[in-house]
Image 1 (tube, rainbow, N blue to C red):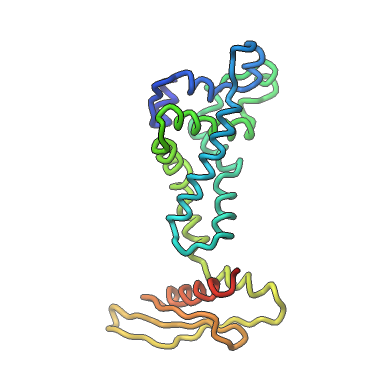
Image 2: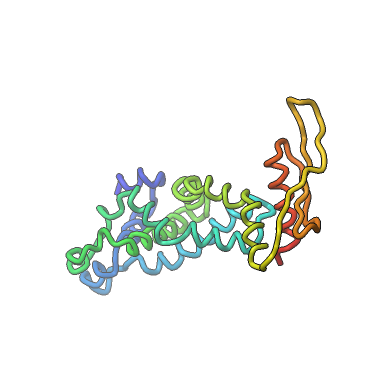
Length: 225
């Protein structure tokens, strides 16, 4: 228990919570009615994970559209992401499995390992009485690893605008510089984006690329419901 606590960066006051979070239903069933599996904790942990991830996305970019936040949250909390966390923590070696599940390769099963990450989140929350410990854990183990991806997805407004506009045939996007100011070492550029020669957005930036992205972002805000 001490080893997994070190990896989690959290020391449990109630060790039973951690033990339950690591107990598969196959083990609990073999031990009888007094033994509890992680399933109820996993149910709670799933909601905690969803909330903390939504909170991160909401604060990460105040102008990130709701639809994009929904898609990013689904990517971040998917089984594959949680499985990677479980592998980094070595949960397969410490989980409590029944004999049948053990023999069928349960320690390597992605679905079990992903569920166990969620059950541990819930155990942290119940043990500490707050979301601080789960939030630190999720930030360190999931969100910090995904931050570059989120930055890319949220900042690549030109690609997203292109994808949106191309849903209709015969649409043409064009970017046009409308001005520049400042000394050579600290210029500011202004661009607008036109769709079928009609202005859809405009923006400024310290580089032409940044100004184009700003223009595309404004266009997306206007075009998306």
